[in-house]
Image 1 (cartoon, rainbow, N blue to C red):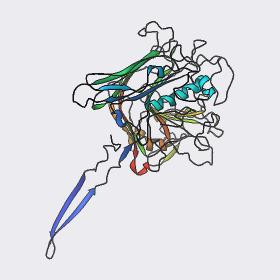
Image 2 (cartoon, rainbow, N blue to C red):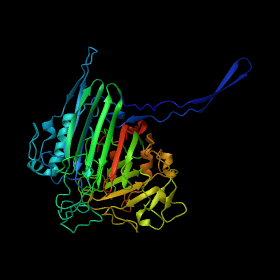
Image 3 (cartoon, rainbow, N blue to C red):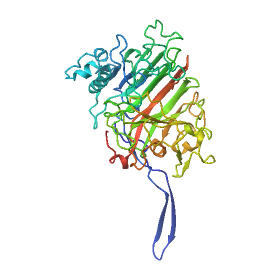
Image 4 (tube, rainbow, N blue to C red):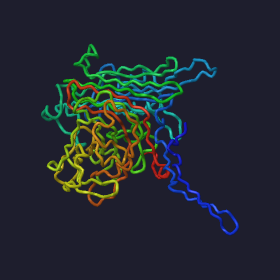
Length: 512
């Protein structure tokens, strides 16, 4: 399948013909009004629009600080994949065959198990966190499609929001800290083991007639007897496609409970190598050319069935990147690397915490599309209602006060988060302008000028340092249900694509 986006079309031209006679000849003057060619884009993902019959999909599960901590019993390391090729029946019959590249044995590999034909360092074999990262790379080799450049898989991400403060498993802004007192109002935890990995049950993709379908489901309740019970946490992702037609539709369900009130579920396009957003290990993914602000767009179709309640931070789009406060790219040093997140919350129940009387929840500046920049104290012009919240990196030495510092525990390194809400200022980029647009009962196909929008957003840097190159190694859609009991979210995602301007593609680095 070619990578050229269908939007590489000439705009309609308005042509006026002026005819008049000169001394001897009929003279025709053609005046072209408009006539600009729409800027062409190429896909930055291996499977543009999720249309390839031979699916490549993987899953990962994390504890609160994007580590593993401990594997769930009999589940293996929390990485798995469903990658297959569809061998077509050349006779024209119905004998198409699904040939899987990843076995159940591969998916059940557990810390201490050697990878087939690989020589691993002893530490990566025995360390549960390093093993999961090594397993992802191993699965990437099994799934890799030999394109130019090669790519691996879409990534389903599960994350447990419980934090056991007494376990001393999560660093504080990248620095190891000892146990500290539980904080029930801030970090939920029912007791020892609350940060556990989930049970994962996988249905390999199979062919039934002309329909391909597969999925995975599970729970964080390790003693669950009935996954349909209301008091049992639950997640499921299923995918289906008709052979040779349309694209894959991914159907997601997520349910929280009293024991597990803070859960996350996303479908991500991660870089095919390097550090994905929020991690400090080599990862694998679908993004073959890492998009850089301001020259890229994202297209997707989203149909939200259930929203997940008032505290569901449902992300129309969530982007993750990493650069140091000096503007330098991240290098894996968790004390100086900083994860940067830009997130559009589409849930109409989400409120703007950024207000004229709460400037600590606002970015210092807003930049309009025309380049005009206004300070948050300019109450007449600053669009406070466009921001849910902004928080500074925990290691920012010169953050403009007042400020709120980001949670120091939920990433391996410090983080900076900018969450925006539907508002007219984002309309020029294709984002929703009013609450309720694209929400339950209003499925839409979005084409978002993410590059231009993300270039205009405020992100912290130390004074006097060169501006960081904003390269987004992870782009995802999904929800983070924040501390809510018995909340249910359900949605479908399809047609996902990242589009990079052709004229700027050669200036992009293909990988970080």
